[in-house]
Length: 445
Image (tube, rainbow, N blue to C red):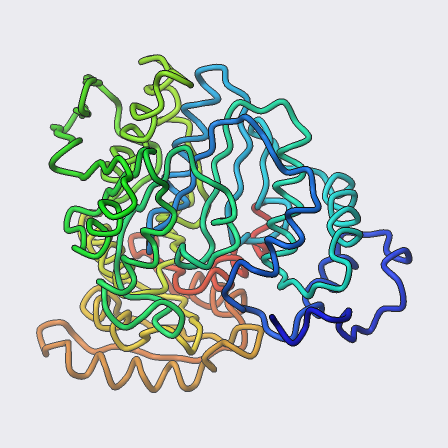
């Protein structure tokens, strides 16, 4: 039993009854538990058992190192285009907390969230929940109150001990397996894959879209009797310059337009989403037209998002080596730009050297920024790492790099836009906070 279960934790608030705004609630939740992350399902299950979060909706649970958000967005868009009623839960948000929960394509209101928070608070009965655990329960409550046909739920961290794993998936998806959050999930792909595989359930579809699945994931799926679908064995894709096609166990979908979401891995994410939909086709079928429409309508800010205008601006929440490698490939596919500027901020607990190493040859001007919060790597320390790593990755033919430090992503972005020529490009990447800082500065909500 947690040391924090016996009584409500000390907070700067006398009573939640005083709260009238969503921000007051969120501030309260940030102080509710002594740790921002505490893995485990015992506490959240005790509270969940007191709440009406049951539903007959088809539940998709999506885990993975990268690609989770994109896969969720495609699932939601295809299901909505087919006429189904859908709730989607993703995290973290970029600007507004409400972005985390959508019902039938619309973000939930402050009022609905506050009402759900009140119900969770009443059900806690002294059990201490983290911010993520508390808000996950509130959003599941919101979904359960609606007559929804499908839930699309993104796992926050790992799988086995993540709060979302209190939901028994009708279809679980692991998008990719790579190194991230090693302090929580383990130091190897095998350890991380085993953690993520725990979203699988016995006798239910378990989709793995990673082209190189680890044996630990395969073994766990076999051990529990999950219906494992592997990319390259049970489903695949092929394409040319104009269109692409999907092949599953029983169905083919040909002459598809490329997804609106940009990037080298989006066909892999789309194939995983289509395999998931095929696996539950008897319960929630989707039409060919809905697949086409959903793929071209799916949107997800901050995932190789290209803003209109010159110089071209790319926003990408690449904050681990796998995502940085994909970003490097995507930049390489864009064609020639004389100089690439980067606004870069990241958390200190990431593999920062590897992230920089993947992009060292692509980026010529580095603008390292301070980010809010104690987990952030200070801009000056980040600049020192950029200087050290790029010195070992770049040759004289690559040209010299410039490295500067700024107090915020928005300040750095303004300076970069003044310096960059129209045919250059600007990449804003790293932490969600880096991208959010620029998006909010631009007023793009």
